Amino acid sequence: MSADNELGKPPDNVKSIKVTDDFVEIEAGVDYYGNDDGYNRLTKVIMKIVDKYGRTVSGSWGKRWAKAAPGIETRRMEGSTRSGHQEHAKQQAIRIYCSACPVYVLIRHMNEYVSYDAPGSMGSYDEWLRYDIAEPDRLNNG
Image: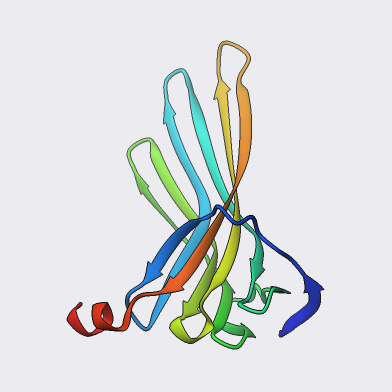
């Protein structure tokens, strides 16, 4: 899929992450942490991708990496890992190449606590991240 014509402008004060390799991969999914009293479910969802031209990019969430825009690939992730009362399930992934930077990604973080004995709780917040190419000298020395 390619970038569409919808324009999106993330806020100016976003956290910047430097891409120091050829590309960076961002994963989203669900983490479960349980005990005898209940469990926490922490969910991370990729809500929006905005390319360096300000266009909203539509991800293709198939099983294989697919080009969403020049230098941006997306895919659906499958599989989970388990350890004791913890489980991590991957659901989405983005691959951002240096040539596509800067790229903005909006991630929604959701937390749900379920108690077996009392009312639970839930909350969420959105976080914009900006992926920038690292300085050329950092690429050569890393």
